[in-house]
Image (cartoon, rainbow, N blue to C red; front, side):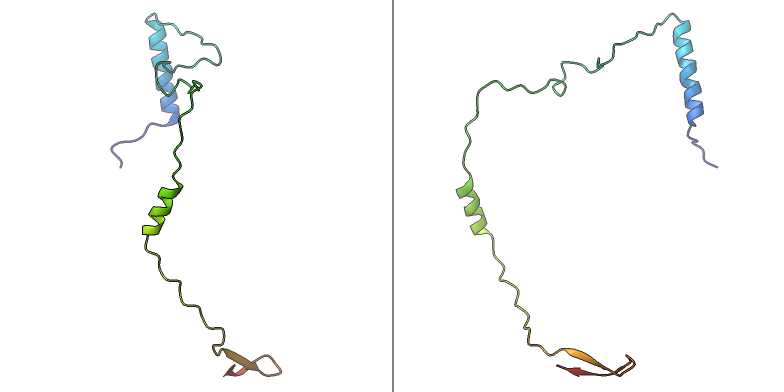
Length: 105
């Protein structure tokens, strides 16, 4: 038998309802929030959208640098090409489609 049994959804719902009732009975109140409002802190950097300030950073071309880096890489020789004139094994079939023997062509 498992020592740490996970609570079921029903048990979690009942516990949450008990906590809400306890909060309300002690004088707490629930505030309604308008649709579209967020609970995020507006001072968090990820919640502030990025804004373009009108200045543009200068870009630096890196094409020559990339060519130098590629030139330093060791290039492997291309794999040897297979000869197409190699002999191949072909089956000889009888009139009924049964293989009789194979020959090299």
